Length: 148
Length: 148
Length: 87
Length: 87
Image (tube, rainbow over all chains, first blue to last red; front, side, top):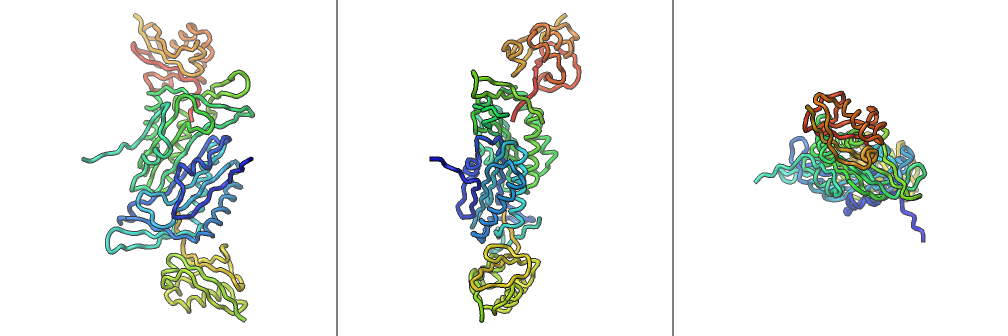
């Protein structure tokens, strides 16, 4: 029985694979390079102490758009072998991962540039929203907006 | 008792930390981004089937040069909080990690560009050598030379 | 004749509408996305400034972003996409 | 008067010298890195083309790369660094 592995691992969920799992997914004997990006919750924003982020997503559309984004990345960076791109939903405390992206390629340059492209585009167009929850006051929080 | 964590995790050894361990080392509450690069053994070179790579290093100098490189990277990318950079010695079979680099920063751009700088410079100046061992023939092998 | 469309609201749009994440509304046949924005603004006054601001709030029709005015059909799903902030 | 320097050989340089990874050699006082290259080439004929090729083989003195000719001192450690290939 031959097993054809999926080219893309995509998940938007309150339970996402670890960095190690994403890394293992993209690993391939033909690849010499795996580049990764992990977005984690920072404990501060403009001098306010942040307790956690809380994420909401339009799940089916977000996953569909991520799939399109992977296909587009693979057109732009042709040697990319596999991509994992996963995003958390719900509460994400300080130092926890909100997004993990891994890409593999035979040589290093394409994997690194592909991951940079993917995180930039994810932030620009995937329908996911974060609310920042601050320590002070009565659980004050605001919906964020990606500015870049 | 206050614990001041080291800023850099550097190791050139036949036993290196995992990606997850390197990632945990660089993680910090003030950082929103961790970028990683993993170099792995590819199964081919110019149509030859590669069984494994075998690494040799001038260990004390390699670690000293990596330390200098980290300091230099931190001058170039000032917001970098922590760096892990580890390189295997000895045999490294196909799909095993030969080098792992992680860097953390408050925002993503610096972490990503710092890791790219680190792997480029590592390949240009750290005294480590790889021998490529091929499948065919009687264990034919050659010492490689980084061309970039 | 009228059509029925399913509406999904997220994040600040959901909250502005009174924490409604899903509803459906009737529109006249031939209604466009512009019509839809006006009807939503009337029905949910708290949402009106956001839903009428095409620079801030994008629409997705059947899970695809739409860039320009589109005629809606019965059974369409339309999602209100306030400024995103994933990552 | 003569000085003694410790020599470390790696990878292709080690093999070209007959798989010698560490040795020590005596040099006249005042000997430079250029002298060192010539003495090594004479002592290890298999190594001569590599050790005389300054474009391919770099030297490290006491764990620091050296860019130009340097006078060696007694007790120095000098490493032969053939083209590197880490990563």
